Image 1 (cartoon, rainbow, N blue to C red):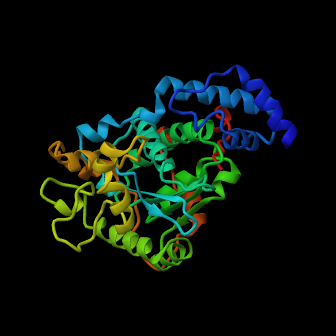
Image 2: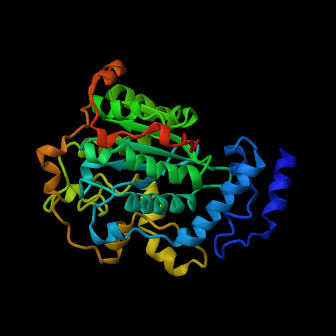
Length: 345
């Protein structure tokens, strides 16, 4: 281990650190993650790390922003909402809140990069991974396209190795299960960190095991709220980037302690801090600054052709064997012989 570490350090001496991004490289923890992700093969770790440094330099990822969220509130819904009991950032998303019915690799990769780069700024020393909670309510087939998921996951695998702590997928149905089960490109180590949970009793059990009472209660309230229907112009409850109108009401921006420390205090921190500060969800910043664009209707999501593939909460888990009997359209299939296995664990 020490020999591999020293060898990688020696090989990377010719690479100039990115100004403002020195915490990434030549950080020792970065090199350990890349070596570990390549089973301590120095040649492969070096190639991977050089590619990431070029990616970070090319995209200026530490200052990346999501123009889609600024231009259309609700376009993306993925946002940090708190921390688990270990101090790992918890990142939540819900498809019913989305103001679109179709994403592209470009906007998805940009948004995910924005969220996780800022989540890193909230992580205490010794914390290196994050947790995702994906509420599948309102998911349509175009939104669960595994080809899109492959592109995003590949970016995470290539440039954020050893960062995934856990993914919890909730309220899915058999169609989503079939899409997931049929995607053999995901590495078994990564797949082992994905929990597919549908029954509310199992959801509560999972939340109480990993999250504080504060975050558990917030998540359960948020999930319940998001079952009401898609985001629309007149429904202020679905504008998850805004402070609730009534004091003491459920705040969709995140659990109370997280909102107090990282959202409501953002503008003041930005003006007074000499260091980079965590930036909240892009549209939250616009709302705090009074620059939020008008909400656009997402009535197109109600078209029958989009086929909602989310499930409903119950006390019954899905029979995974039924997934084998569901036919998935060719456009949602990945040619597993043409892709490498993905591991972001």
